[in-house]
Image 1: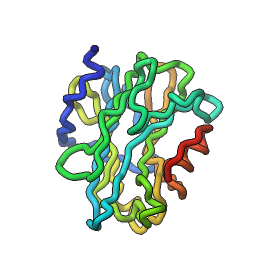
Image 2: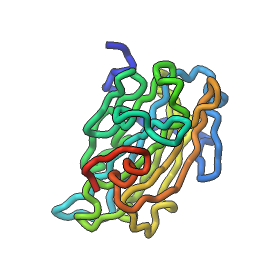
Image 3: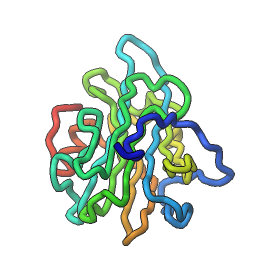
Image 4: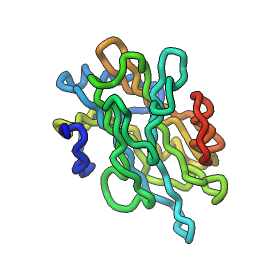
Length: 212
């Protein structure tokens, strides 16, 4: 098993002097870090309200081709399908509470293994059974998405979501986009909200899953 699939990564925070990004920014990841070969997407959060039905936030990705859709079911990486067959992506585990410091969930992208047919990777945050439990992304606090070089643990950029999520009532959002530009990869912070949860997001990109 290669080091790409090493799941011992602890999600430790690396402080940056300048790395905070916002919607509308376009970060050339390879320019920021010329050694970049793999990309780690880290996500962390806490919950505003605690009750018997704790909010369960999930990190997922859709790998999209030039048509704007997934090619096959395996282009969707989430808690129930964690590893792409070509080795291009791997989900490193599901957190159901958001407890503790550091990243709650993370996904590794191997840019060399990822099919050249993939032009974008959409980064999605969604609440498991959010509609059924009357939960929404506005209940989340201290949420962020960050992009790292997993080989060096260097944090390239961080997207803080507190203001973006404030008073929102949806159950899912596209929080970022990794975009291929020739051999280089860019990160675009995003703030597109989706009513209907992960299931609605999946249908948008050509998949059907039974999840709200």
